[in-house]
Image (cartoon, rainbow, N blue to C red):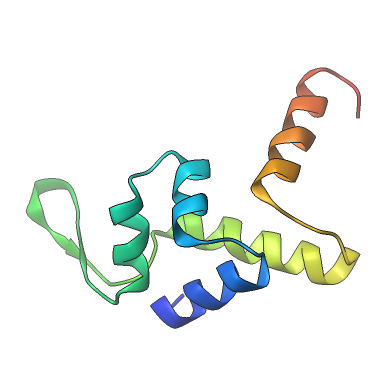
Length: 91
């Protein structure tokens, strides 16, 4: 996922970089770096390609696909509520 695709996914989901960062529990600077086409530092000082890490990419692609297929208003709050209901055995 390129930084442009990352920004487009957030826009489609109605999220800002800051709101997405808060939901993920990462620093907002991190989310901005993903969108700014800057390589990110990894373990041992190794550089990784620009854009978000693979788990974030998978989650964003899933959220966008689900929104398109189900015509749902997918938001981090919706996902949190769904997960909470699942843990409570309501689903």
